Amino acid sequence: MKRNSTLFLFTFSLLGLIGCKSTEKTSSDSEKPMAQTVSYETDIKPIMMRSCSPCHFPEKGRKKHLDTYEAVSGSVSQIIKMVSLDPSDEHFMPYESKKQPLSEQEIELFKTWKAEGKGK
Image (cartoon, rainbow, N blue to C red; front, side, top):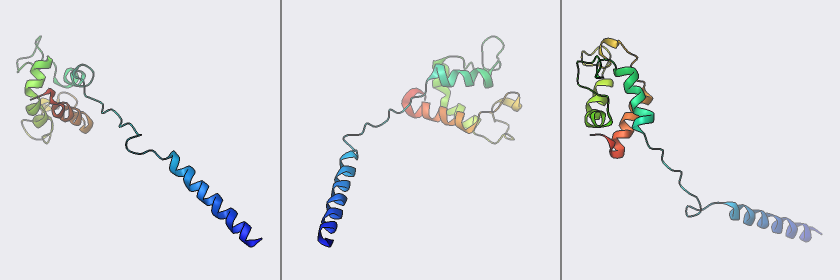
């Protein structure tokens, strides 16, 4: 009787292990999630409009215009540098905190956008 119960437990355990193994995904079975890209229109432009207008927008702006994809992508390194400064720094943007500063997440969006090759 003891031998039968031991054999039963062994068989049951082995089947359980086989069942677990068959449900595991291997690296070839699993699909890697698509990395979400940063979009100028969806992610970057709204931040620019909120935090950089009217100074850097044509209607009233007297500073370098940053109202197009081309302008922002050509200046993204400088933008990242200036929005990352300490707010007490005279070069910090938005200037004199007249607008809401960018959050860490928003600054990361700019860094990711640049890393994706969309900015210089």
